[in-house]
Image (cartoon, rainbow, N blue to C red):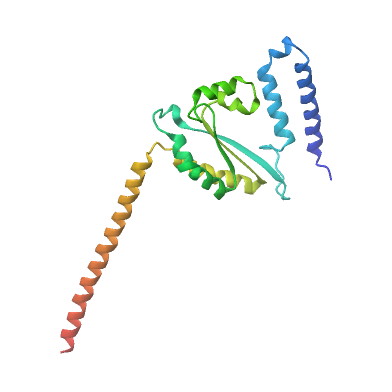
Length: 211
């Protein structure tokens, strides 16, 4: 059975495509509306591919695509290497996070690579796949699944990123974790020694009472 709201979506999609054609055929007039063209293309893609849909169906296992962009706070901490921390050694940290939460995760935007000149060159090529170099540094997270599953996955990635995007160097973090582990070891060792002393004292008193 066709869902009533879907027929309205189809009408909107057709109207968007008609407006896109008018702008493409408008020559110099159409070129004035580059932002409108970009927004129309994004909206058409969103409606056609169920990306972050406004309306959800949860009574059936209908997959949707959830896509979110998370700002990397390099503008607050310009000297901290967030990209390196997110990626990890040879990208292992990012790959592990993607595997754990079953998401596609990308580091995009200005400064997402080490070659800024190459980024600018690719951006100026006009190829849509390189348009992200014109935007701020960010992490893009995507997944496809039934609504409740998709949002759980995204939430898991966001929770992990909330810790990763703190400007604490991996070296400091390593020594802090090492200190915590050593401190716990000392507590356990001290507790065991105290227990042994109390046991020995208790045993002597018992023996003395029986004589």
